[in-house]
Length: 226
Length: 199
Image (cartoon, rainbow over all chains, first blue to last red):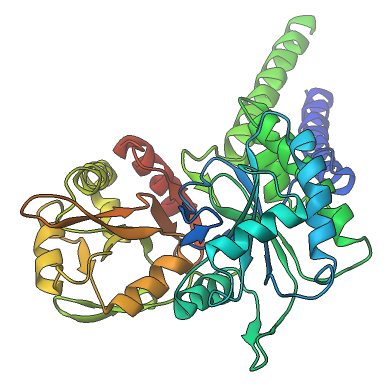
């Protein structure tokens, strides 16, 4: 009787030990990695390069990389344009069947009219339907969307230029911010964005049925892709 | 002796299976019907006007808040969503007092605090309707990912408001926890809220 009781006790301890080890192994080895669900992306309507309304509802269901600049920004504008040109080519390949878009919001609405945006889009080789240029005609509302909504600091200058902190924001199809890229860290911003697009695509494609639990567990244990 | 060993082995196995079931039920991640957020940033606070005076999101800390943006002239989407929220409240039973539904008007020109309160009370007596200046509404809506825009239509109403129709769930500690897309059944909303209340 005592021996049987000892074996049952051992079995119970082993069971809990295995559960504990499994949880620790999941956290340490991170077999599934995800991007954090950082916050809600802002609600907005903007005017794009064709003078059409562009809203966050239009982007529902799409993974969107937001970026910010102004068309009179000199040179390659802090490297933003070359980065987006690469993302424009590689992003759709990485995302596969998942709808993907780039939205560049310009910070100089007085100058960046739809006509100016259209010319700029052609100049940088933006593919229509994939890479949008847009702004809000009301500077106050633009500040609300870009400043409070996306967290981008910018300040128009008397000489017509705009001082701003370059930033990219990755938003998923639910309108949730999944990546926020402020400056170069250990890896280049470009490399991180492309890698993160892959992580997000994998999550969207695979998190169905029982696999969804693994992805939820990855969120729960903060298994975030670096 | 052999018989006793068999039964002990049998019950021991049964115990382990039971423990396994309990552990799975207790620790498996709950599959929410709504879209989950795991933000470490508190939901933006706001103060808007209700029929009983100013109302802030932070007034409801300790309760689960369901935030919905709509307007009283809304022909279809708003009544449908509020009906589902009413259904969720019915299903929650006594737990419904731990949940506060707040509807923010995206049509501040026409919706007075009294008007929107009368509108939401039609669905559930504890629902609160709030409104504010166009600037206040723009600020709150932008921060909660809500698009809205006036659309002129022929007829007596003059215009309708196009708007995002999601329901945002803010947990007891003031963090955005879930988003329900338009059309989420009251049963699914109630199940998720029940889980949040119990955990």
